[in-house]
Image 1 (cartoon, rainbow, N blue to C red):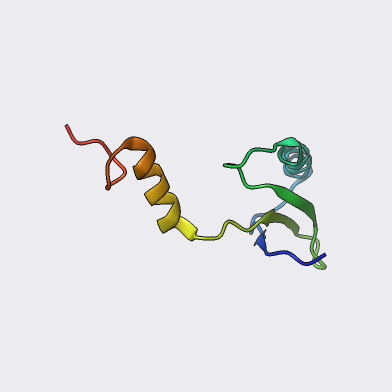
Image 2 (tube, rainbow, N blue to C red):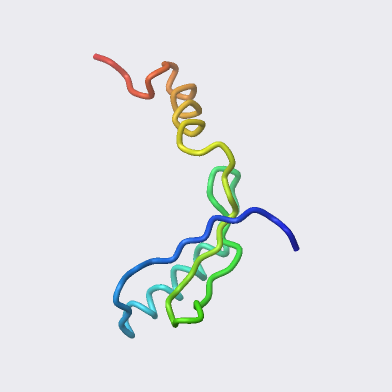
Length: 82
């Protein structure tokens, strides 16, 4: 299967408690489906034992997102002025 993904490789010291939390978070994210939420495709381990998350890639980046939020708020700057 070929698709663009965003790969997240957290750089933290893993402990058993953190591993359990990571797995629980992955299970929760896998169940979420909404057009405005990134979809978690897969979560796993790297060859060095670190964790990895593979998300759908949101084309457009932050600038596109900022403009969309500004449009929802009714102004061009993304914030309301007093």
